[in-house]
Image (cartoon, rainbow, N blue to C red):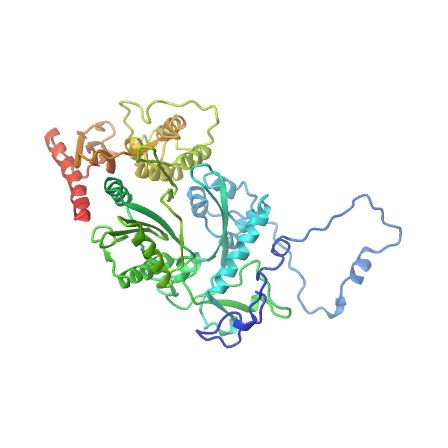
Length: 570
């Protein structure tokens, strides 16, 4: 931070005096400052006889040896540091797309591990476009990441999201949270082209304590069935759609309580000031806090209420005002209206209420789903980018053969306690999570196979691993497939339901796996011929005693969802 620290900060004191704002980016020489210095050594040089190396080195030291006051450097232990089994299990099952901070790894000694143990093992299942600062500075596009960091800091400073204060002003016993950089390449879903390098400055929320600096953390997001419902209505009625994005969404809200963050790497202080003696007192809801999403959602909700919107009782992230529909998933919003002028007016109204938003144009790429308009007026929704990522995580080769069905006909998966544990070089729960999101968003054909394999995520065995591999082999041949929204104006709500009565029953394993007595329910809800409102394949909670009872229980489950959808429409 290239500015003089504020000695007696108040809630209105800016980090930089307004008249002395720097005109250059506040990160100076970040590429050199963050990388350890290296010295080239020529091993072929011969030293003349009589030259004392220690004498030559001491002549280059500006402070004589006898005047040094700092203690001598401590000898580092040569003992091999290993994480606990619980920590190793945590690392091996966590997706690097939502990684823990390297600062926390350093504290338990994992920083000294080579990247292939255990960090690289965890990274194999993560997104290669998501990384930390150290990895970003080693990448070929490091300059783009550095520019993104400069832009991120400039935006925080321009909006006065913090004040820099001496650590002596922090109340005793208050924890100063670490600062963590997270970097990401953002790609277009349709082409995979990198269109933006993003650097996000986060508070190390893993250091927060419940009841001290955070309380409630739940934050709702819009359901996919609500999105599909209103896209269908928009197609039927010929309404217009607009996608908007809230810029630096979380920091637009005020911080919930007093929060302090350490000086991030890459910041420079004026000469004579030590970064260890200063910290940042947050004024706004900076990313990384456990409660950040909840605070932003409450801030957005209050703003929409002031603008005259009403909140749905069914979906908390559905708002409406007259014929204007607003859907929001964290900081990505969709506006639907019959009049394009009202959409433009709402966009300007957001700005008038101090929301920083950008216009993303017509709906094309929402939450990783590619939404393309067809020549006949229909929509095609697909997630080929996510499928490519799943196949890469599975280490599938380009010539991997495909299969015509995601599950073997008649195969029954149980706990299979007698089989070997899953020990492949891919993470079972991570792949299941991605497949589950894919199925819920655009691929109803995967519903049965994914749910069947997801039941055994706690203790996967070889038969379960084979089932997941088969799903992925099916995706090899259908990676570009999605579904079409092509409404038939003569059709209304339709519900299709069916059951498999005790289809997984196995008397030999029933004692250890009571779920074998459950019946499977499958149902599909369509509006105007579009099979996109709700689909499911799951085990019913009730133990049915006959086929008739199972059919009625399944129909009851499906109609409960229809009631929700009809209430939303009303």
